[in-house]
Length: 392
Ligand code: PMP
Ligand code: GLN
Figure: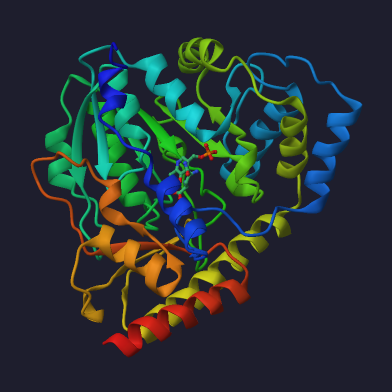
């Protein structure tokens, strides 16, 4: 039998699917894959249901339903004071995952270099490689996850086509500040490069911090492609509605990939996402403060058990060092053990690194997801405590 594509053949099943299946098999609480345990606001889901019955149900425009494109442009203005032309500068995709793929496929030529920061979301590397891009990886080190400025500057060259930047960051929970973003902006200008900005957790930032899109910095408006996700913003991760904001010139190139990839996305879900984006500010501030309280709850519980917990300024996730518990094994073994023996699933942070990289990935961190009801978080803490506290 002839083999499939060699880039994808090198990858197994994603860690998120593997850990979720293990949780199902062992009746474990799934704090691995990032998804809320309750569906998003009823009025938003009702909009989707109504639009499914009332229609339209045929192919929407390739850039997306006008109502959602308008709403994305409006939210750019409302939250970030960005002036965006909804007709030429916004495109709807089937999730941020497709948006990332479209940006990568639409912009990269074989041999172009792409700067990425480890730990990194699992779809970046395979898609860059599949597009013929050459990954240039730099690393943020725990526990502070500081931006490695010297390494970053050294990774850029005139062959750099783009950086892929994720803020708020999965799994580190880091929110990049203006100073860090300015440094990156300087490199983009110096090397005439673009930034694909994965901002799916833009509305999940805690402790009064602000999410700052790189696109808002001087000179960055036409270099950045800003990606959002209705799945995260409205707690409906299965919907797979993403959106890209970019200059008309960049978006035209990316839309070419989109039209051959999915062409378009379910119209009823687009209309419901448009409705959601027009919710008043209390929805968005409530989402962030609820999630911040969940982070606090899980963090306190894990600390009490003896984990060393890292800060999480945003996202759904908290990373912990499990070495203080005396666990004898690496992160994959820890997460498997925690799922099968303690009854609580997590994701090994080593999965967010290039496996065959020259420098070994840290293997003593696990990622726990806190976008769950309080009762579930408490039960998870109890289970972990019963298992690990009596063990040590
Ligand atoms: N980027 C990051 C950093 C993510 O955590 C996720 C998680 N789902 C995605 C992109 C993909 O988002 P979507 O579900 O909208 O495709
Ligand atoms: N973004 C989610 C996470 O990091 C997973 C999405 C997926 O399973 N592809 O857990």
